[in-house]
Image (tube, rainbow, N blue to C red; front, side, top):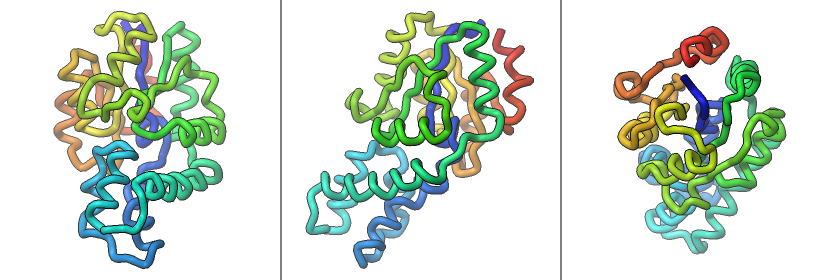
Length: 217
């Protein structure tokens, strides 16, 4: 039975992956430069700070990593503040979980100021008891640190604390750490066979989450 839930944000709660998947190349182009081939894919598993360092190294920009990070953040801030929406059915599902006493938190690679903008626009902040970010934890989702910290906060048993993820590498990390995983389909994740194999439950359409809830209890 589910007692706690750790949600990824981008691609899981929010339909935001199209913006993220092109942000690095769009930023480099905005500087009048040609992005490294495959740049967006190469930084996909990196935290924002790690991505800024990579962009700086491979494009020899006359900017500090902090300046690069700020430029990317500003572009995403505009998107989160004015455009981002929840995936269909997500808010109803969060409401159902809270009604049943499940403790909820977010574990995301996105930095806190952007998370705040996104949750305020989509009006789902009140569902979550805490937000954990990779930059504050100090490690990306290739390691389980962020999930373990979220678990410690929730105070629930690991086997009763489900991790909701759309990215196969993050789902694999949570799975290896012993968490039951709910895989949320997102078309920008190419490794659907991998994530489906790892997951306790696989959700192809978030509109089906309302019906799926009975399987968690």
